[in-house]
Image (cartoon, rainbow, N blue to C red):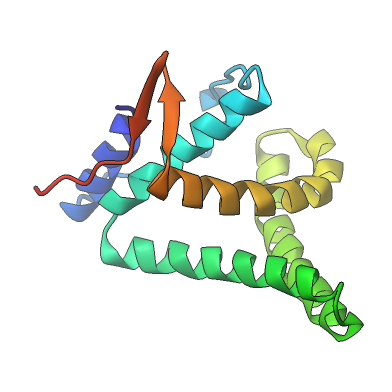
Length: 158
C-alpha cells in the first residue's frame, strides 16, 4: 500500500544509477491539494513513516538521528517545567533545527517562487517537531487508514 514511488527511487538508488536527479525547475512543479482534515494528515504521515523500515541502514541511521534529536528537544522542553535550567538547551536545540530548515528552505522558496511561505517556517517547524514524533511512533507501531481501509506496517522479507 502506497509508497511505490518512494520505494522505486530507493531501489533505483541502490542500483547505483547516475540518472537520478532532483527536479529543480519551477516548471516541473506539481501542485496537489492538502489533506482535508487533521486526521487525514495524521494518517498520511503515519503511512509515510511506516515505509522507513524498508530503507537501507544508512537512511534509517540518519532518520533515527533526526528522530532522537526531536525527541531530545521535546524532553528538554518538558523538563524545563520542572527545572528552568533545561529551557536554554531546549531553545538552543530548537534554534539549530529552525536555522537548518531556513538554510534549506530559503533557496528552495526562491527557486520555486514561494517566498511568501517563509514566515510560516518557525511555526511550521514547531508543529513539524510534534508531527514527526507522533507519525514515526504511530506509523511504525500502530495502524493508519488509507483509501477507506485500516493498515499496519509490514516488513517484507525480500
